[in-house]
Length: 152
Image 1: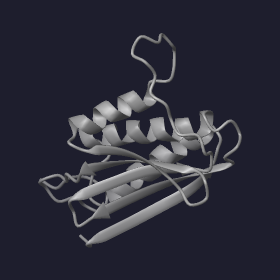
Image 2: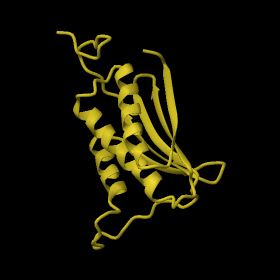
Image 3: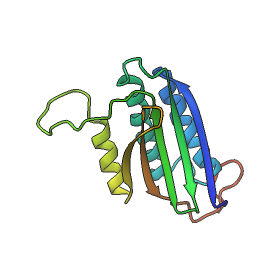
Image 4: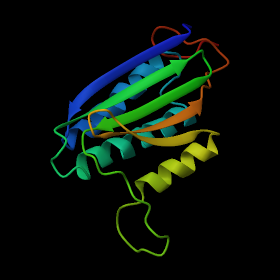
């Protein structure tokens, strides 16, 4: 594998883009050797779903698009992130708050910690923000064929 791989896609801030973001990330990771039917792939799919959903729901129409970035550094660290142009950073809700939503970043934070990774929120030069997760890169022990199936 290469020392550094990058991929990104910019999507409209529309609910339909959440599934497109998931498919893009899972497809990219499969090309890089991580089969879509693994536990870590499912975890990354959930993380991207939460980040993309936040970019659509919490920018209040002030970010017409969001960008999904995927980076693999030296077969060691995987970074996935979502950038939008809304300046407001996410806020932690108190544990006692009873709401039907607003727990996405708590879920991401927990999943990231479970895999030995870290969550970062940083401003962009354009006044928006990027929320990203860095995880250790884990690939299957068996080689993956072009069709994405593990060889025996």
